[in-house]
Image 1 (cartoon, rainbow, N blue to C red):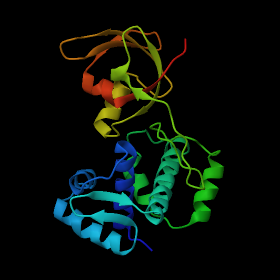
Image 2 (cartoon, rainbow, N blue to C red; image 1 turned 90 degrees about the horizontal axis):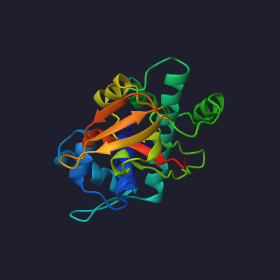
Image 3 (cartoon, rainbow, N blue to C red; image 1 turned 120 degrees about the vertical axis):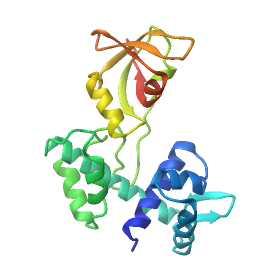
Length: 221
């Protein structure tokens, strides 16, 4: 049995490995869980002793098969609870992360499966992140940052790379949401900012940082 803290670390390692495709270092883990590198090193030793990770100083960290199963189960519960909070309780997408962080540690697998069924077996959470199925499998999604879209092209918004409250509220303010059709009108050479239209409505000017954190799927139309 893992502690809540151990589960949080396993989830963080899983997310980092999914993003980079390679072993991750303690500094990256420390940044994600908001702690000191020394604290991460201590935790890595504990997780290694439980055979949940493969860890060698200066060579990075990866999850064992056992550790990956635990991490994916935590991720699955977290994302299902986010769907529940938004769809059933009326929370906004910028309000659910911290609550789901608490709910993801509930041990009952029966509850998780009942929750999944109750929600209609959702494939993505409110932020566009894919939800692992009961066997731990996750479908791959073909998406790119909006910043990579060339001028004159259209795409469908499928997710966000930045889950922070500030970023999600920025998108709400400008009425940019999952499923919207975004067209790049013009890209500025100087700072890579761009002018976009959302659902063919008025144009919006966004920075390159914003464009990098909006994930899209290229539209065929």
